[in-house]
Image 1 (tube, one colour):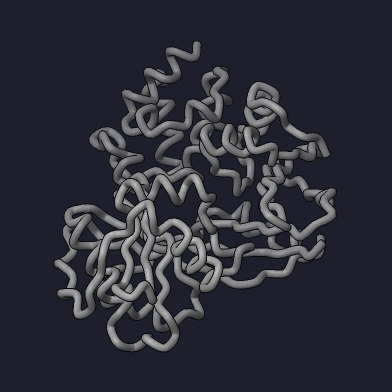
Image 2: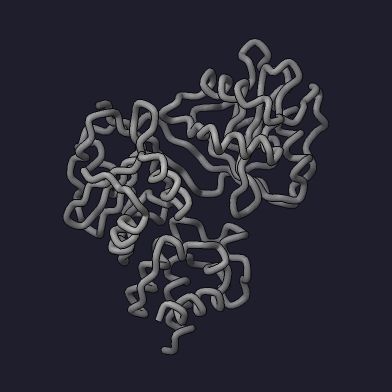
Length: 76
Length: 259
């Protein structure tokens, strides 16, 4: 599985029923909530072996799959 | 307990808690933590598999926690009253499983809240039957007094003076003419959240709350909005449901442990 597929698996597990390949305002539209961000960040840190912080829990880092992939790459 | 003096000391402790399966009610932003630390009001308690955060308020502390999967949190080491709010959906089972633990630690559940959401494309509200005016910075003392009068300071999520000043400056408060009621909103990711709404008891059931809500909805037309309502507050639930708000699956429990 490549990084995108791994991330999609995490997101689908956390927030079932969302088409993450299309959404570009996941936080701004309330599809992902603060509590989900904690889960997603925890899974991302564990899966991709990166260190993220509370400061990273910003809407602009989680509004789309591409935003999250960028955050992961920057943290590596 | 340890007092946190700078965010640099807190960040690694928070990061350490971000592990798969963690249960938490700590959804504070970086800015929230920085503000709490700057005010000298943040203490922590570390324990095996978790962390407590005590946000000091006037006469009580707000308790936030992280508990790793399967961990039973210990008794919080705090003398004064502790207030804890836990918001979750049905699928957030790890949080639900901790409820008996909080009871065992001396917390009593005070009440539950439901979250209601109004979509951005909801029909416009009815016209205001009562005169409503936007709040202004010079209304700060009045709004603080109304908040104290109508909300419990421990569970009412009262804004700090600086926060209220900002909200007034940004046009996020409306008042009934005669100052016998007000409504306060704050921005949130989907649009805005109704933070407080109150009307003098002598004026209730006359459409005053509807007038306040209509003023806010008209001013923020095109935005979605949220509100948390106590599940036993039937008049308030009726008001919001009449204005196209519907429960969105989030509930919260407010817990208190007296000191």
